[in-house]
Image (tube, rainbow, N blue to C red; front, side, top):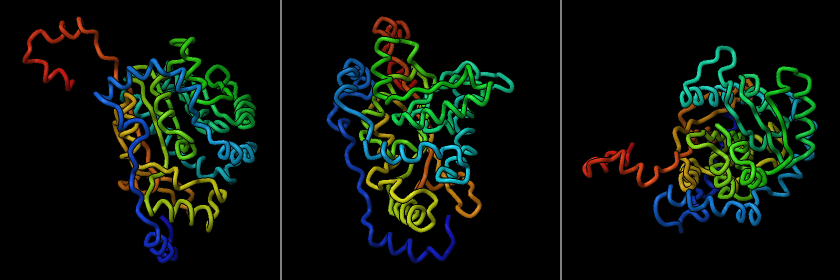
Length: 327
């Protein structure tokens, strides 16, 4: 990813930094029964959970509040995020087309409702809207939402497709208790967000709550490895200043294994994980087999279990039960 002159630095840092040991997922380890059982039982606790726990870290809000006016500077602090659209937009589009099998030439995501969590200034919200989706972007930083609304107002094609709301995911999830299907989405996107959250368990729980059965969750984030510390923080923040110093906290990074375990405990099945690589010289992103630094993940919400009488009708013979359980 970086030139050889950083090799000694990277190796030295990796030697000093102890390997991270993935802790048990908060709340998930103590659950009994299948992930589906835990997921359905958890729905009854959504209001209590939303009121008592939050995904928002006040320190993170302060960081992004100070940058709220700079979202659309393609050569500024968010240049790498602008460049990331070359990967993440097709990643979302292609996986949604595989799931929904819709065909709308020119507007391939027409008819789909997408939630962009931690949307910032709308860098990913807008291109998804231009693909035909109806997109709601949410962010706890009100100034970022103002920036997003102002920028979207310049494009008439986005007027009926893109909207924004200054709120948290848990607030939106709690509102869904009364709004019903109006607060259900075909897909959720959380790109470069989970590494800034205070509570990943609440995040996963609320995502599952506002997703339709069969809906997709897309995440891009950073792995918790020695290499991600050396390159993602020391080199990217402190040496090359690709992003402002202090943007990331390595302790909040999450491995694909831990994230998959967390999502599955909340009724989501991971479909794919792909590594991402940033070249600071060209300013471009590319796909890679390695997930040691950045990665993208696609998960799908499990469909509701059939009612007992429906299960009996679909499984008339006892010997069919084992195969039906894997369908």
